[in-house]
Length: 269
Image 1 (cartoon, rainbow, N blue to C red):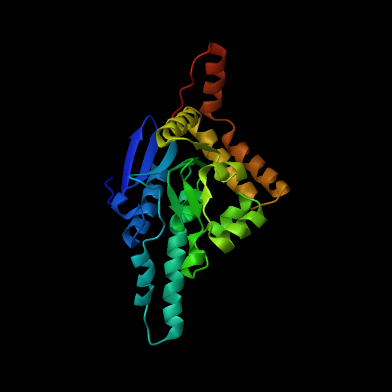
Image 2: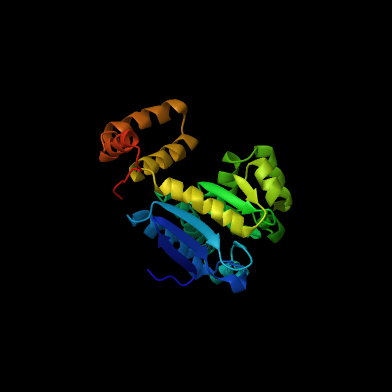
């Protein structure tokens, strides 16, 4: 499909999705937010796609929400305060659903972050499965400096990634976290000296994932997300039910045959 604010390329079962508003530091206006949801729903449904790399064109990864879009909240006018607040609530829920579409995508999403990752950009990467960055990348929960409580995912997902006390520090101060610190605190898996080195490594990881059974990768993502929000006992029970339905797949036979024959496995999409 053709997109206006995103560049999408699919090669060897790897989809590279890039923010494509470099003239605006890849900040997202209203149309881009709604389009991003469509992009990840398309990746979710596309059988050719087994893994997604999320990157940014131009100088920055993503500067978050376009401030003009944020200021347009004034358009939700009404002579009734309740109806006005109802419209604002729907606007926030719609933005949240866009971020959640990344998380709900059945395919693993690897964020490749360079330079600015601010505000909504942090919301976006917290919904990704893995994060990688350049040493000159910088992350900031910028909403605090704009008179806002971050409201579309950062405060809900980041405490499952970082120490809660550190999350509080970043949310209260809005300070920048540079690439090397991001690696040290576990915000990203690795930080790289250059964007080229980062993309080479991320593509290698994506290729490794794409070579595995798509059914297994999709099931693994499902289990990891389920465990995040449930107890160990609940998660084990769900795992048993899942594998009772999925264990007898063609993929397990192909994986064993490939191992015995010392050849790469070939799986259906």
